[in-house]
Image (cartoon, rainbow, N blue to C red):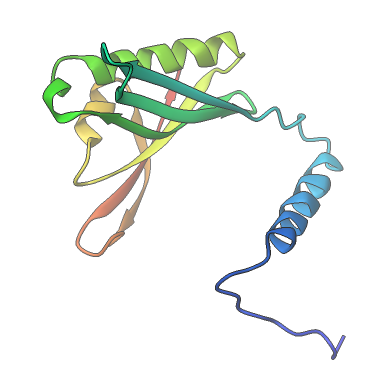
Amino acid sequence: MADLKFTVEDNPAQEDIRTVINKLVEYNSDRQIEKDEYQPLAILIRDHNNFVVGGLVGKTQWGWLFVSHLWVTEFLRGKGYGKQLMAKAEAAAKQRGCSYAYLDTFSFQSLGFYERLGYQRFGVLENFPPGYQRYFLKKEI
């Protein structure tokens, strides 16, 4: 094994990235883990010109909803649109057989918003980014 080498690559080839991911998925499937039924999810708010003025992006996988991004344009904030996006995402996730949801947010974003929706903190990274915290939250849906 002396001929092995480590390389740090700033711009790795997509084929190399796919190899690592595919081999991990293959390993997991050999372990009797439930089939990886990854399904993207997007819920958008559009104005009368069909422009996106808010939205939620995430996925469902292994009985969990993951909300990766939630955004509502400035002039619509505080009017319940974010809450409606989350409710619609949770309803869609339930239809897909999910029982749980998780997400993360930063201390300069919407921690209180998610907690008011019933999400509970289960982890925090301090100084990520420096001077702030990154919170991880979950909820039974």
